[in-house]
Structure formats: C-alpha cells, structure tokens
Length: 319
Picture (cartoon, one colour):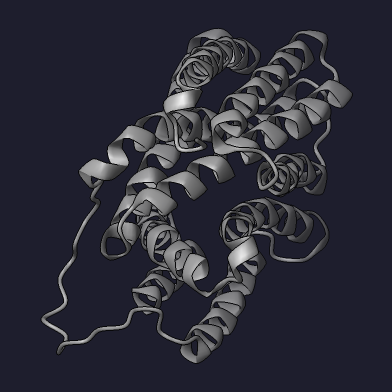
C-alpha cells in the first residue's frame, strides 16, 4: 500500500510539472488525494506499530502535521528565492519521494500472518461497533481542527497579499507553517492529559485561535494572524492526538488501518470541504468577508463540539 501511495504521489508531481491548463491541475490534485488517502491510513498504522510504546501517538501525528507544515514552507522558500518556481518545488518533491521509497523498502513489515496470504483487495474504511462510541466525538473534534488548517492553507496567503500587502511567498508559507508547527507541540501536551479532557481542551484552543484570526481580518493585523495560527495549531494538536490515540486503541488490530482511514476522511473533509465554501463566498463577499463568515462558523462548531465532549467526557475513552 505504501509503495502504491508513493507511485501515485510521483504521478501527481509529474502532472504538475507537465501542466498546461486545468485538466492536468485537476488530475494532479486527484492523484495527490489518492496518495494522501493511502498514506494516512497505512503509514499511520505502520508508525503506530513500529514506534516505541511511549511515543506512538506523537510519532504518528507529528509525521502527518510535520509534512503538512513543511510543504508550504519549503514551497514558499523555493518559489520566492529559487529559480523556476512552478517547477523546482515538484522536482524537490520527486527527490523526497525517492528517499521515501528507499526508506520504505528497508522498513520491516508490521503485519504478521499465520496463514497463506489471500488475494489482495481494497478493504475500505471500517468503524467496528466497539469503536463507534469513541469515534463520533473524536471525529467531530478532528473535523473542527482540520477546518482551521484548511482556513490557513487557503485564506492566509491571499489575505496577506491583498489586505496586508505582503507579497513574499516565503512569508506566506511561514504563516501556514506556524499553525502546523504548533500542532506537534499540542500533541506532545496531549500525551500528559487524559483523552476525555484533552479533546474538549483542544476545542477550546480552536475557539481562541479562531477569535484571534477573525480579529486579524477585521483589524488587518499580521501579529494577530500569527498568534491565531499558533493558538489554533495548539488546540488542533491537542484534539487530533487525543482523537487518534483513543480511536486506534479501541480499534481491533485487524481493523486498525480501516478505522484510522475513516478518521482521516472525516478530518480531510474538514480541511477541504469548507475551503470550497470560502471560495464561493469570496466571489460575493470578498476574501475578508468570506474569512470572517468562516471564522464565525468554525468558532460555533468548535464551541458545540467542545461542550458536547466536556459533558460526555466520563463516558469517553479517556476513562
């Protein structure tokens, strides 16, 4: 599965290198999505099974957030200061994929079978009955946290260029990186907090971060945008690690990859679907107005999720 994901990711980079219009751009994004979907379930399960017992959750979530954050930072630096800004980032991506291929080839297989392997077929997503009680609140927290990540990857570069008049692409990448960089810090803190408390506490961080982001849009303030990114990233990290840890712990070993994949689907709906809404709203309200509406919606969703998680924490996985 990991080799298939690497191949799809390489094909995606090839589409962007050869793009001559929207068809190749859409094809590249579609292949990238397929690759991310395969990686998010299979690679996360592999990390959880290979990492030391005390750092499983942090290793898995830090790898995901680290990649999401380093992407815009590296691409912004290359686009701003290196030649061929529409080519070099994807060539760099292909080089990183080659390194990933070598490392995956050397990685031990984590699945142990006591009978001959049957024919390989896609298993899809699966949430076993014994996992559903923890999956629903965990998925809600993930959706809310990833919605903030989507806001920063979609809106902050345009807001910085149009409203703050900061056209430096490396600076835009650094702002996006800040939210993803703060996420592993929140994940590290989540390891010391029971899951039933970490989930609603993470939602509180999301609320505070989005309030700062909304104020930054109103006041045209870069410092508020950055502090909102950091605060929101901390909250997202708290909620995400707690959600991933409790769901993977409750899922049976034979269904862990499918269950984690389902959790990531919910999370990626949060990072992707609201972005389409922001784009649609911006055609009528402008980028600032769309960002304000989105900020209010995410604050309300995070408040509702946090309140529900706090009320049900004694029935949750942290107990």
